[in-house]
Image (spheres, rainbow, N blue to C red):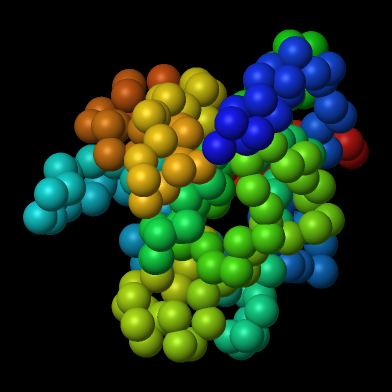
Length: 206
């Protein structure tokens, strides 16, 4: 735990890295949103109804469906180079948060949720060409529920909220604002629309 915190503190003064953006999933062209299929309730900003222990809120990311029929080891990638600042590995809500320091003083954060087979830890520098983990396999979906057969992907404008590590989740050092956006104003204060964000970055390369 101490090592993870020290690594994170070291990164806080690290120089900005080039930010080349890609889809977080396998695709023939990872610089095109055309490959993305969303779940029926997976659009950014879609109202979500209240349920037990979860208030009604606006959807703060996109729910990207598995790109094919690979239920063994379908990879999930970082969308750009960065460093892992938080990791949660407790079941269907397993989550990785990556900080991306881009040239010009711009910093954004990406969130990847409902992962399995995590291949990174806090303090790791990640590349968009090496997986963070994978989509759940059939055994895991049968155990946790097929409603988790997607990648929940967010891009934050604001730094995630710090958390005190808990015994069951010692590397969960930050949490996004996923259940705190009750209006369009809240949503756009904390988040980018992932599709619009990536499309704007790719357009600059044309």
